[in-house]
Length: 159
Image 1 (spheres, helix red, strand yellow):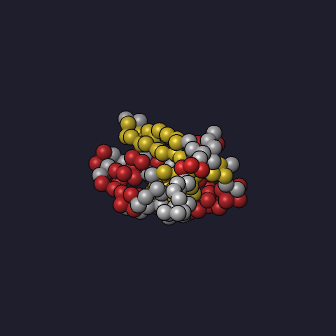
Image 2 (image 1 turned 90 degrees about the vertical axis):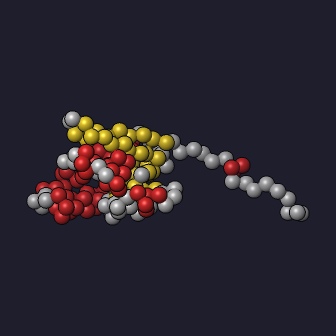
């Protein structure tokens, strides 16, 4: 199975999110966090998290870019348990056991998003509020194979 990990190219996520995800942590869309939001909730850093943030599954912080990679099934189950507990602590689920199927569905949805992409493909999310609720669209940036010339330093040792 494939899932996605948080990736940072600069420090901007540290400034635009209340709680930024840690580089390398597993991520899901996390759009459920915004299911009862209105336009009034979309200000400042909260707006940025809503508009473009993936949800990290260790810190429960947000990140702008994720990269597709392989994950072992045992890791997926651990993430499901962690997410189920998060649902209990932050969203009022009655128990981890009751929340576990929903957590597994969230991970399966992310797995479906990642499955058709090669490792290291970057994904972004864009959310908007509609009459019917939150709408998410996803974009991908394919990994480019680097040519050695891109990294070679040209010159002479005689200079």
